[in-house]
Length: 372
Ligand SMILES: O=C(O)CCC(=O)c1ccccc1C(=O)O
Ligand SMILES: [Mg+2]
Image 1 (spheres, rainbow, N blue to C red):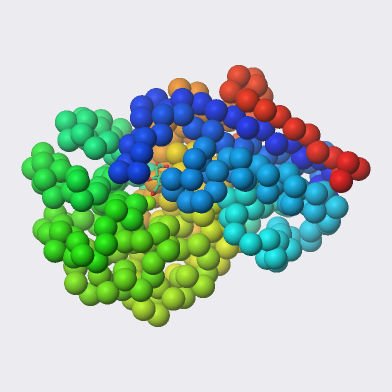
Image 2 (image 1 turned 45 degrees about the horizontal axis):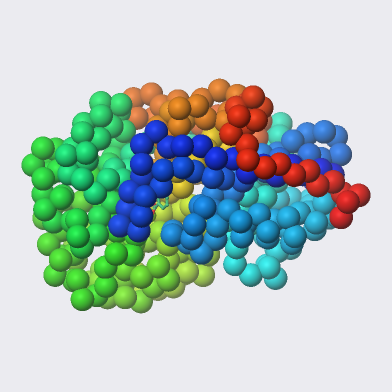
C-alpha cells in the first residue's frame, strides 16, 4: 500500500541557456513545481509539474496547477491509501481537466511505488530498452541561428532535429536548412499555426523529406487533420490534440495522424501515457516522447516511459545541460553519441540536489496528513 503522510511542493525558476522561440512567443525563464511525497516508512517519490508560467501551449499555468494540487489533489492523496499508482487516475476522474497538475503528483506516486518494489520505473512500466534516442528542437525564427544550432546539435550527436515553423517561417526557412543539411533527419512542429486554407502551403513541404509534421492544425482538432493527411505526403504527428486515450481512438478511426507525440503531463500522468502507448502499439502507430523544456525529474520520468517498445522514434529527449547551466538532480542526465541511458536504479534512478533546489526555489510548502 502507498500511504503518503507528507508532501512538499516547491516552485522553482531557472533561466534557459538560450531563448526558446515559437510563433506563440518566447520562453526565457522556466518555472516548474517540484513534488516530493513521503510515505509512512520515509521513502520519497519525486514528480515535476510541467505547466508553464503562462497558458501558451495548453490552458494550465504554474498557478492553476498549484491551486489544483494544493486544494483538490493533495488533501485526498494524504488521506487515501493506494494499492497501485494507477488508482490515482480513477480516483481523480471526477476532477475535470488539469492533466499537468494531476501528472505532477501521479508521477511521484509511480516513482515511490517503483522504489518500494526495488525496481526501476522503466521495469515497472514494462520498458524494454536500456537506452533511448535523443532529439533536439531548433526553437528560433532566425535562419542563421537555426543553421548554427543544427551544426552544433549534429556535432553533439542528436539523432533528429525539430524545426518550429509557422506560415511566416516555413518553405524558405526549411529550404535554406535543407541546402546546408541535405541528409539530417528533420521534422517540423507547427504548434497549430495553420488552417485547412493552408493546404497548398503544407503540401509544398512534401519535397523536404520531413520525418513528420507535428500539430499543423487546431489544438483540439481531430477531424481536419484527417482531411489534411489525405492531401499531403508528410506524415502528421499529433501533439496538443491528444489529451487522452479516447482522442487516440478517434484519431485512429479517422486517420488523423500516423504518429503520436506522448507527453506525460499533457495526458495526465504515466497511467494514461502507458495506455496510449499500448493502444498505439496494437494499431501500428509510431510514438515518441515529447518534451516540455523540463528539469531533471520530468526528464527521468520520460526516460522510463521512452524505454517502452513502441517508442521507436527519437523523442524531445536531451541531456541536463541542453537547457540548464545546472539541473536539479544529484547527477546530470548525460547523452552519449545521441543516446541516453535508461536508469536501472530503483524508481526514476535520481534524487534531488537539495543545494541546487534551494538556489532556484521561489516558494515551498509542506502539507502533512494530519493537516488535511
Ligand atoms: O523539451 C523540448 O526539448 C522542447 C519540446 C517542444 O517542442 C515543446 C516545448 C514546450 C511546449 C511545447 C513543445 C511542443 O512540442 O510543441
Ligand atoms: Mg509539439
